[in-house]
Image 1 (cartoon, rainbow, N blue to C red):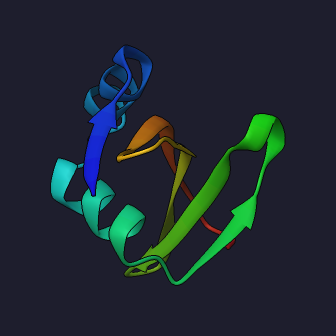
Image 2 (image 1 turned 180 degrees about the horizontal axis):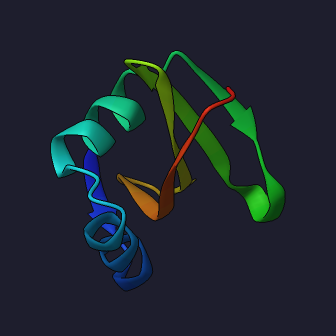
Length: 74
């Protein structure tokens, strides 16, 4: 399944120094996912002592990454 990034997500990745490969790992192989608002979901994956969260929307043949951020709690 193809992964597409919004302009906002790309901006946040650059600002927060989040690698595209880490986002792809999180979206394709999350530790767990949580339903979110507006039909979205949050994919969560642990990297060292931090968790990467990716807010996504699922479309017919693609996953749209809306935003990404680091957090200390899952």
